[in-house]
Length: 189
Ligand code: NI
Image 1 (cartoon, rainbow, N blue to C red):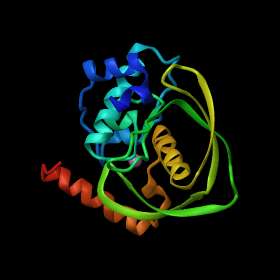
Image 2 (image 1 turned 60 degrees about the vertical axis):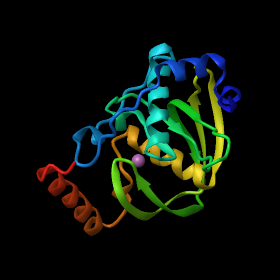
Image 3 (image 1 turned 45 degrees about the vertical axis):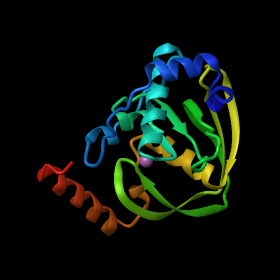
Image 4 (image 1 turned 30 degrees about the horizontal axis):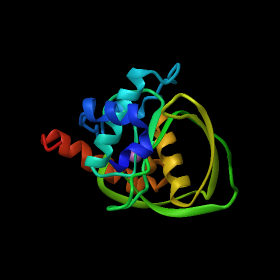
């Protein structure tokens, strides 16, 4: 019942009633390069997508997921940085926008559920200020640093058709894309 405090009762009931695992699309699916459309507001249908995203992300497991990764090109992101055994702390973001970013950069080893088993160091602004609509459709602003800052930037990139491999060397990027194209041809994905 610990979830109740985090998602509110209506959210929890909807989650338990309707949650469903969705397939995560992977490279070289062209949808990953598409720009996602803003949502008009956060209604029941959007909350259902949020819940499916969260369930799918926890199952993977991952710490962030954009709606386009389950084949829904809408500007929706879920993030949860809580560790195994800790209380879950899901963050729901509709139409997230970065308002400002620090000049200082941080390096983190990134991975992506749409590019399984591939990790590389990426340099991004250490701190960002982000604006979004929460699960209730209320406007929120958040100052993020550390892994949260990186994760938010990674997920917002997905909404613009940008992947973390776009920040690494062309050589490494071409190599990983080729690997996934080949795997798809062989029917392994
Ligand atoms: Ni990703």
